[in-house]
Length: 493
Figure 1: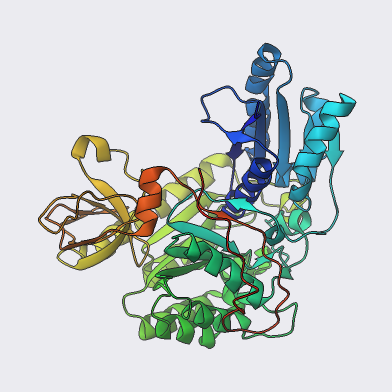
Figure 2: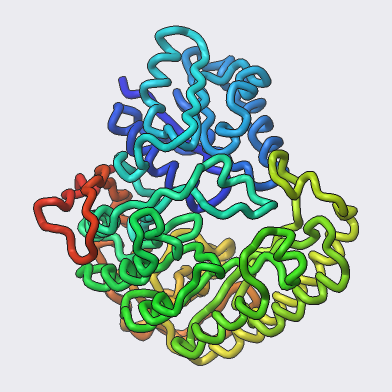
């Protein structure tokens, strides 16, 4: 009888993609996925260590799982990800009912560690200090039938004082372009229409093999993959952003005119304290160049409020940059102290009430700007990749949701003579925006067009793509040789 599993993922896109790799390995080892509410023989917690309450989330989940494990003898619990890399054996000391702890550098070890824990009847803790097997060499069970993550690098060479990621994921390691393109092709062969190139700093891609223009070349190469309709990437670093990337975005038809570039602060003094190697003028100049090349580009960002020592003047400078930048949306965070980071030991830690008041002002300003920018799109025609469950009220309004090419969320009515059968997640539709809100758009008219896709077929049938590990070691750009590209394993339940 097959053993069942669940994976609970916390944190960033990198963790989401790591969970796809974990799922791929478990299913190759004979495990079968079950819904989160069902009892499972194995629960894997893939943790994040970026936010202050990460520890509370982990141990809160482990507390609930203890009771479930007591009711189901033989059940196993595994903890991986950044918090596992940081806390190591302390997790087992605090929660001795955990069976396996594994780090960010050895996600490929999970099936072996689980078997060893069963055999030895004791917890297994394995934390490697550096990457031995690149995650792309592992099989992956993808979460989406129509959109896939493709990691181009792991780790980070920057030393931002607020960030714990470099110490947990290590120095940047780049995949060869041929490996990346082979994985993209494998996904497209499975019916996937959209890929997002993923890295801690995607535009520093190529540093390991000595090509500072590698990322722009990679974007252009993605343009030659037949059947790939949309290419996105996240997240670039302003200090490494070069004009050739802007040109590649503008000139490659399937690269979406969407840019997520973290600002973090609009104060040059705070940026220096954060050890962010750019200043606000440099940041705004990049946005000017992007919009000159792509006037329709939607630009989003990350901003931290309340960094140690931030004054009211510093915060006002952030507000001014936000006014000038005209972000379509922003992910705003209240600074949280992370043990092990230089910022945690800095003087000038701000009171919670001060940080909260500034945060509220920033959110109000950005919501106002987002609404103004979204209202400009009322009456415009948009192409949407239909998504799964992105609207909380879709069921009661009879709407569905999709993402425009610029990344904006659009709720639409799946009606009209253009509809071919039924609209499914993974299909492509065109419609006209009728209403704008700060965080989404609405299109309540009849659809202008509807294209059924293979991704939609797979989504309707409940099939998720599975890709085999890709490890070609190709140093050049362009299409990988046909014999080298993996078949991808076929869509399977």
